[in-house]
Amino acid sequence: MVGCTMERAMPSPTKTADAGQAISADFNAEGYRTRRFRAPIDRSPDPARQMPLSAALMVQPGRDALFIDVLPVESGVRDPETGIWRVASPHSTIPGSLWHPETGRAPPDPLLWRGLRDEIAKARMERPDLPVVLFCRTDCWMGWNAARRLAREGVEDVHWLAEGVEGWHAAGRALEPATPRTIAPDLTKR
Image 1: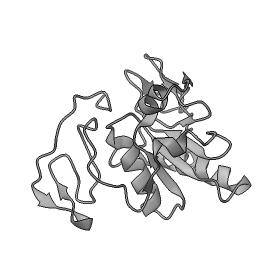
Image 2: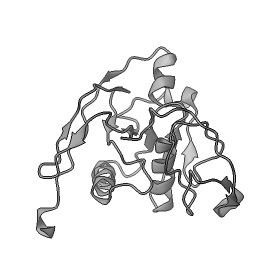
Image 3: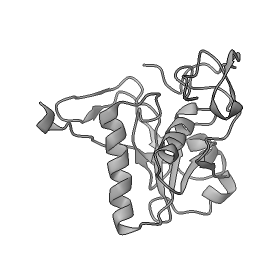
């Protein structure tokens, strides 16, 4: 499975995408990174906004903002019948965060993306002004992709934490074991 554990690589620009950003074979026509996700990020996820690590450290995830980790499941699989993930390698994340693996891909799996969107909608039914903060690892485009996609789909107050789990931990903050969110299949479509 290709994810944010891949070797870091610099893109070689070949054409221009929307907003005038140079893109390469690593990007699709919409400007989302599609492969080699672990690489330096040289642009903003407009219309989402980057949240500085210093600001994120002032927020209590799960209370002040909905923090969503989009890191892929390493060496794991999702049961298509139940939606439950079988994880071979443990993952630790920012306390209070929700882990929605694979939703930073371009394009994301439609069922997983809908699950992420539904989770945000549910949280905002209780708190309509709840900010959403997406992240992965440092120099990982999956958090960037997910934040940009959400904001472009009209979700407001979307932020991207560029430093991700690694930056949070490097700032002296604890991490906690994560369990991937179960996204049950839509049985009405069978």
